[in-house]
Length: 202
Image (cartoon, rainbow, N blue to C red; front, side, top):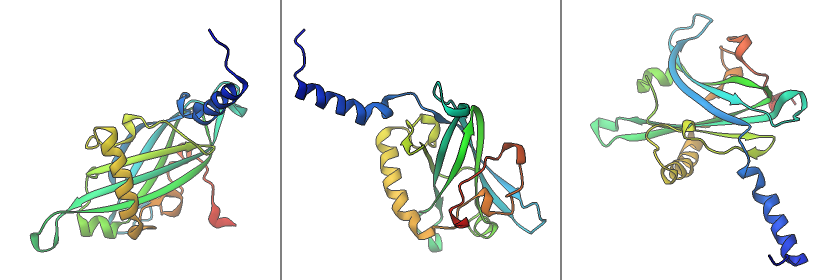
């Protein structure tokens, strides 16, 4: 086998450095995503739509404290709703993200909520038409597993189109879908809620 020239070897090593993290095993994966209508703990009227994302955390060998640092969870939702005056159905999209300080080995849960006014107005019950979860760990994108997307997004091309279109459409609703720590549920599930990076505390 002919040895690589110094230039070719340098290019090959650069290539490995660029793609290596993407080819490695995922440190965090989406195990399940569950949607349900829940009442606020303060007794307020109306129910919120809760999206509960269960994560499977697998730190690499030798990770500090057997934890994965800075896990960012981004959720995209698209609900199919009736059009005005019985017209063509339309999609209403939402997005939100939360960054966990660090996650230990095992299961972790991250929750997002839509407020009761929208749940009542749009009759939001059950799963959205489309949904997807994107994960990064310490700035490294995690491989997208099939479990990170709704059954309606069956292949990679559909998922790519969904991410592009929904991210753009959801901008009009920024701040409506919110992470748990910005809701009346902030103190719920104390044993199953990670600590979050709070940039609003600066």
